[in-house]
Image (cartoon, rainbow, N blue to C red; front, side, top):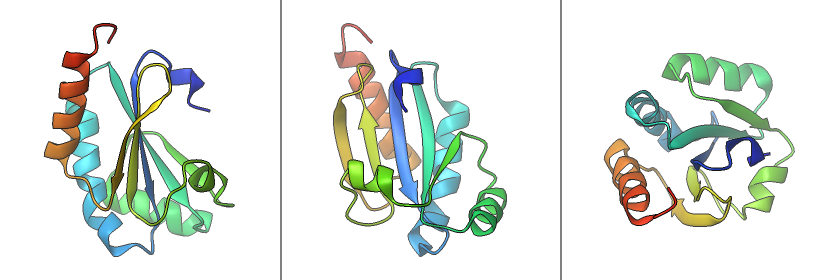
Length: 123
């Protein structure tokens, strides 16, 4: 549940260890996580990987932000994820405000978050 993070922007990044583009995307998300502010949180969601493959992938990427396993694809289905990688950004109230198919760069993510935080009078 993303309810734990209400009041902050939540970046949900759906990925899998078998996704070649995901391997290039995770280090950038890690950079965004370490340089980010307290108004947002990045959560990686591994879709349908065996646990060992996912853990190995996370270790190789050096990712330290929260990671969740979506072994049955339930979360991916809930957010209607058509392919990987895919990033969804929720506003502080939990509403989907951005759907980004394909890889997202550190710069794109930081720009989106800064723009939303600046425009949101409650953020």
